[in-house]
Image (cartoon, rainbow, N blue to C red; front, top):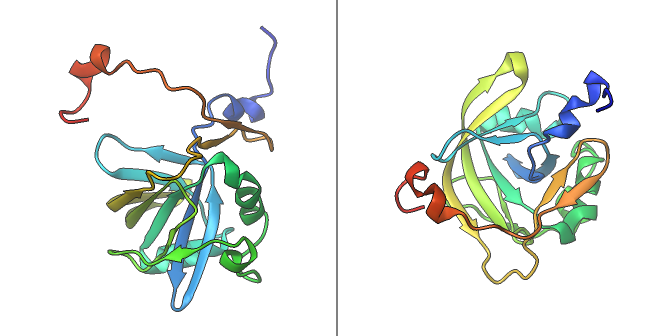
Length: 180
């Protein structure tokens, strides 16, 4: 093995998938790209890392709600574009031709072009580590969408797409929640 710079260690375990997080502040929708996300357990509790450097963070902190939208690999260039400009001076929904769909339980919009959307409420902010803990309150998936492979950021400007799935549910049955 060869040594890797410790500052690059995160590229070995980047969690993915890359998601889009939408907010609504007053009458304005915004969307940001987030690659640092985490499922907390089998409940609908998630965490993401963001902070004041992202324009959407103020709305997220103020409204305490958002939507996690899961894009597929066919949206990669839009996802990167969204992550490389700011909502302070860009209407990202218009620029990247995204269709805002009203949420049922939150004011932040779902994104029609995405594989899935999860409406969320903020349940905790861990300022020391810029972690936002979210509870999912509704979830949607588009079963008609042909492209479903999710995007995973390596963290150095390169990406990996999901591949073939391997089913081991029978072997893992004793470790999975009932009905999963």
